Length: 171
Image 1 (cartoon, one colour):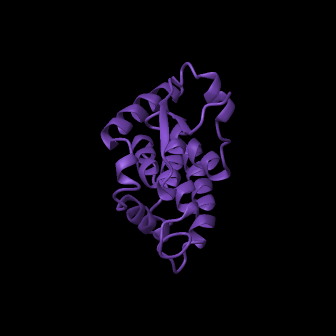
Image 2 (cartoon, helix red, strand yellow; image 1 turned 120 degrees about the horizontal axis):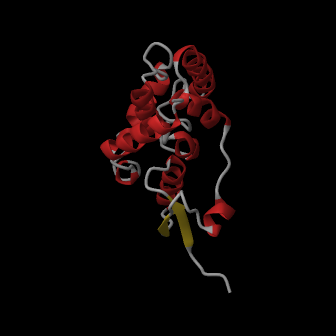
Image 3 (cartoon, helix red, strand yellow; image 1 turned 90 degrees about the vertical axis):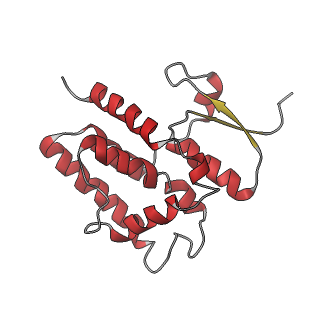
């Protein structure tokens, strides 16, 4: 017999998990959070792990690339984000004046991307290149109960990503 109730499998720094928590909170759904060790993933996590989307795939190389390669991947990430930015024209959030589902899906960028930029030394979302996205980041991070309460501490996330960045860079 299956257990009842919503379970969220995650790791404290996962932007994918945070957006799930936002959506559940937005809908008032009670859930159980199950912390996972990503070095030793449970069978349940492996069954329910979401796929990587196009923009996520464009942003990740910014974290690992260096030199000329980094300039290229920054440009590619910006092009992907410009597609999203067009949907923000004339709006506070993707759905209009209120935080909605597309904001849930990509809202993690507001907290994680500045950390990726700091760790990698790259600038992706700038006033010059993506002004609407940059303003949207500020609006997302200003949402108290829904967003702020579920974000991992910036300093802890920064330390984690600095360590990961060093592991991933070529020797």
